[in-house]
Length: 265
Image 1 (cartoon, rainbow, N blue to C red):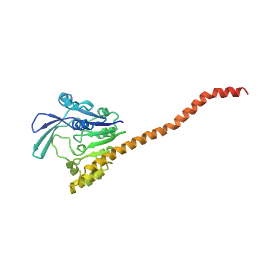
Image 2: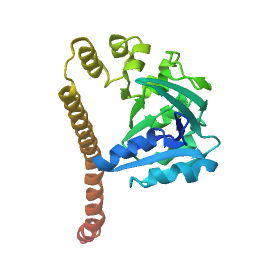
Image 3: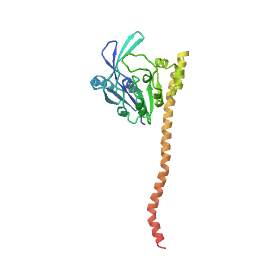
Image 4: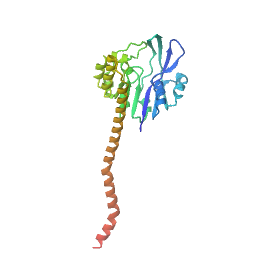
């Protein structure tokens, strides 16, 4: 089993003026993976200057980590006023390259934890998707990469979604993209049904936990069936070469005896 990899930039978060703390998809995903278990790895980046502060809290979670150096570290300032949150991008992280992203190895599923729209260029997403399935964080679509107070927008390149199997969207990200119905038309394979469930929950207060769990089970079942079909297909392709090899071996062994008998006549 090839397992799962989570890739993204670590972030230096400052909350309400307090001391910096580690953030970013790799860290928060590792917290969940520690509880879920299974075959998974984290591929994370930050600047060398921030490595001693940001990497140990991640590695302490016990999930295998591949660290790569970046020119800059993403930095955010978060301020809370009751339930209201203001998010400011102080410094964008360095965009990923194909060379750095190759650290995901042979994972079958990749969770792409983008912090901004600039984190994963189109060619990098295309490379990650080659022979794999991608789950993309909605921040890769709606969060601009310029410093300052973050205002979500829908100015993303639709070509990104050609490489995406699953798109994870928060409620505010869904709203920016035009609502659940518009999101369902984006063309992401494993999004339409989930978007419909979220719309139902928002409009009628429906409980969607069972639906989402069922969808997750269906995704796992489909992935397993496709893997088994690929293995069976590979076995069938090997059948003819194997038979030909055996025939050649029999001829190679038997020909001298047959030739000797025939020469006696």
